[in-house]
Amino acid sequence: MLREPRLRAAYVVRHFWDAMDFRDSVRARDPDFLEQHFVDFVSLFPHADTSALAPAVDTLMCRAGQDAAAFRLVAEIAEKYLYEAASPLRDEAYYGLFLDALVASPALGTYEKLRYAAQSEAVRKNRPGMPAADFAFVDRRGVRQTLYDLSGDRLLVIFYDPECGHCLETMAALRRSPAIARQVSTGALAVLALFADGEEAVWLRTPPALPQEWTDGLDATGIQERGLYLLSELPALYLLDCHRRVLLKEPAPEALMRALE
Image 1 (cartoon, rainbow, N blue to C red):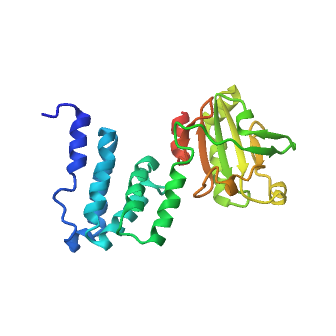
Image 2 (cartoon, rainbow, N blue to C red):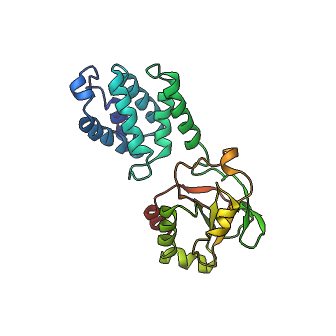
Image 3 (cartoon, rainbow, N blue to C red):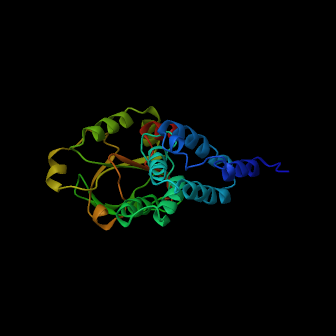
């Protein structure tokens, strides 16, 4: 009876775990078994009607709650695949569904819920489609500007630490990208590298090697203190459109360069 692909996928998502007995500790506590089926489960999400996703996640977490160890294992797997930066399945919107279920679940204590509540706050800030939170910064010339002052049809913001080796390696890779160089040269893309959490003396002492077309700035707003951006790790990349709405939130560098190409 379900002829539309999205309705079919929604049906499968809602009933995916029907045959899983989480009281069977041999399977319910088997990381390999659960990971494989979890990946199959969330791989259906893009194809299903969105209204089916939250109930499907609630059903999974409710069933998993029959065994405390299995419940925590599912939570770990969800974080690994949907929240960790290196995961090819990373999707904060999907992870937010699990966070809602985790924060509301009686299977977790208050202390455990605090961590997931903090993650929930992080994934809901500056999501794709939302206007990026504005902030002020000072550039290398000593000029004070704001995020929304910068020109360019699109804006790439790189939150970095000048003493972070991984940050410098990532920025060097982005600097070598032909797509980024081409778009910066035509004015289609502006790049802001921002030291968002540190001392001015460190920033002045250790300037990174950046193209002259890029803007290198020091936070003048207190981004971290005010919670404007909750940066899980550095470097953190944001791609914004001409209206400074978020297009990509913390993508892997490879994903960013594919999108720009």
